[in-house]
Image (cartoon, rainbow, N blue to C red; front, side):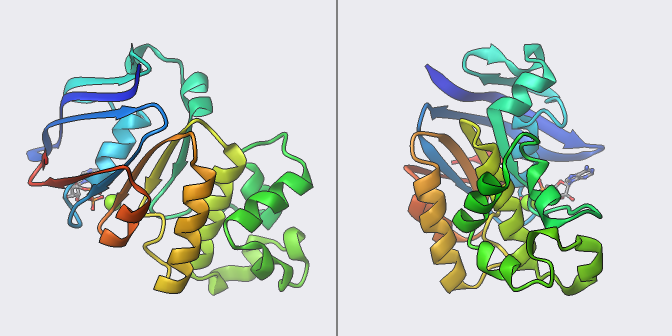
Length: 216
Ligand code: ADP
Ligand code: MG
């Protein structure tokens, strides 16, 4: 059975037609990369798969079921989403990662952070995992935030991984490390990775590109 299906999906914001008929099928355990320029609708596509919004026209199905019929808790349990910009809360690093899995142990949080290559950095902080994000203010770099976002996804460990530009804030060396880790952690999972960077195609079985609201 196909795990993810989009059938002629359309989505506009006001008069702006962003997606003009997107069809996409991702099989179980398949990793798909969607490449396209900034503004082409890649984040919108992922948000439709998360049902942040409904489509204007067309269908989104998960394991053969219309996404509109899946309750929010089941959908969240099935999907790990790494947002383009990681939002952190005024709480400790530990709690910020644990929002992905409230029942996780400290050891599981550490394991997820190691996979996201952010553990060593956290250990340099004054109170390690107990350091408050608020105290750090704006000192966390875009790359550090992004790796915390990935740690959340690794902790959540859902069968569907939706990744929005997961390496956009990393230099090429860090990117290579994270892509290797993603490849390992996503083995057996169904993955949709969107990016404007061609380098992320490396971990994909199939690559699509989206431009002017259409997929090729
Ligand atoms: P990408 O991720 O490929 O850069 P997006 O999906 O973020 O593209 O955005 C595609 C287009 O839709 C852009 O022109 C953007 O300004 C517009 N857009 C995205 N989200 C919204 C929104 N919530 N309201 C209005 N316009 C939006
Ligand atoms: Mg985007």
